Image (tube, rainbow, N blue to C red; front, top):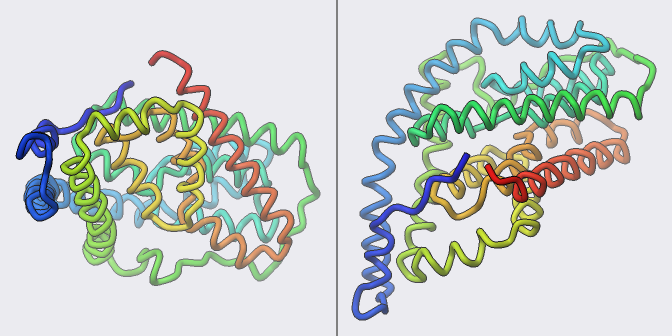
Length: 305
C-alpha cells in the first residue's frame, strides 16, 4: 500500500517568480485549490455519514451487548466491532471497562481497531478500496493480538457495578439526534478540520515546495510513527482527520499513519479518565496503547509494501 502523492498544482506554486512565492499569492493559490478539492469531498462525506448513522441506529446496541458477553473472546469481538464505524463506541467501551464488564484486553482491542474519522475521510477522498481494507484489517489483527496479550498479563477478577451506563455527550456524539441531523453535524465538524488541514498543507507546499516537505517528513521512519502516535493521543476526531489527510496528501508514510490511527481512540480516552477512578491504571492503558501503535508503525516503515 502506498500513500497518495502530492497534487501537481503544489509544484506549480513553488516555481512562481523564479522559485520565490509571495505570501499573498501563496494564500490565494492555497485557498483556491482547497475549495476545489474539498467541496466534492464534503458532499461525499455527508453521504457516507448518512449510511454510517443509519447502520449505527440499527445495530449499535446489539454490537455492544455482544462484546460485553464475549468473555475470554472479548478481544476478538472488540477488535471487529471497533473497526465498524459507530457513534461513540470507544466511549461506551470506556464505561463498560470502568464497571469491569469487559476486560482490559478487550478495551485495548477496541481502542486499537477504532478508526474514528479515518474511514469517512478516506472514502470521501476516493482512496483505493485495497488501501482502506488493508488499514482496517491491520487494525483488527493488531487489536486482537494485543488484546489477548494484555488479558494474559493483566487478567483481573470481574467486578461489575450497577451504575454502569453509556455516556454519549452532546458535544462529542450525536447518537440521539436522528440520522440526518447527526450526519449533518458530523459532516460539519469533520469538514471544518478537512478544510483547515488542506489549506495549511496547500499553503506550506506553496511556500516550500513538495520536495522539501517530503524530504523532511517521509525519510524519518522512526520519528514519523513516534510523532504520529502523539497526535493520535489527542482525544478528539481532529487527530484522525489530520493524520489521514497528511497521509492522503503524501506528507507522511504508511507506518506513521498506522501508528497515529492505532493510538487514536477518539474521545474514548477522555471518557476513561472521567469514569475510571484508577488513575495509574488509566495511564498504564495509555502507555500500552501508545507503545503498541508506535511499534507497529515502525515495523511497517521498514517493510516494503
